[in-house]
Image 1 (cartoon, rainbow, N blue to C red):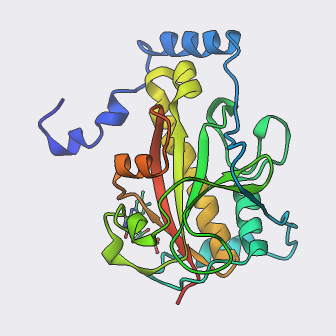
Image 2 (image 1 turned 90 degrees about the vertical axis):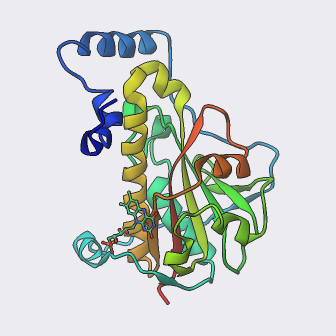
Image 3 (image 1 turned 45 degrees about the vertical axis):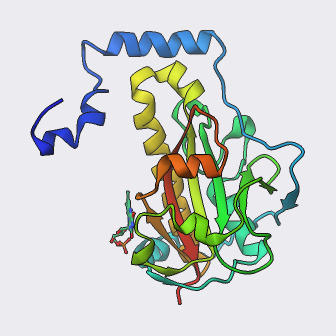
Length: 246
Ligand SMILES: Cc1cc2nc3c(=O)[nH]c(=O)nc-3n(C[C@H](O)[C@H](O)[C@H](O)COP(=O)(O)O)c2cc1C
């Protein structure tokens, strides 16, 4: 690894560059994975208590342009959990399944649907404390066996002192198994890109629904993974605190 800090910052990317030398193995790996039937899966938590969410109805008069221009990270957030209708709209429009094979608003490398979205309750309202998994297929939340004290979740955020309040904490998780088999060393890059797509959906939809999502890259990764009882092949990629601007 380079001693130059500017170059070291790019090690993740440089180590997974595609060029004439690396392209054949990359292409062969992807084709072999397809031939072996590596396909998408949508994570579910059968047997866990669930809450169904109202299906979103597309709002025909909501201009994307105004949403794009208006989105900003707000650092004073209210603690009121968005209503079931608002949360249903946010999750369904941002990360729901609207077609076969798990396809929806968030692009997915190889269509493998490697991302999972969790949320932890930071504020007050109708949702029971603790952590929930968004079941994309059922458009429902599954309650997990996880810490219920919001302080535990806040402790896992490096910059918890740089914002006030918040109702929900989004936690974006990548499953490395299928994508790793298909894309090898480039898989981590793809997971991060995919998480960026999802986070932008959450940021824009939050703004258009009268909320704000402040994205947070500073997360204590392994402790967060343990709090959610993630698989050893999962990685926490990104988090975001969401609430009404105060
Ligand atoms: C990849 C990424 C990671 C970020 N991580 C943090 C973070 O850990 N803590 C924080 O307070 N803000 C974080 N932010 C929010 C930025 O500070 C914020 O987007 C920036 O100040 C620009 O403000 P704006 O979002 O209003 O345009 C992050 C943003 C991005 C894109």
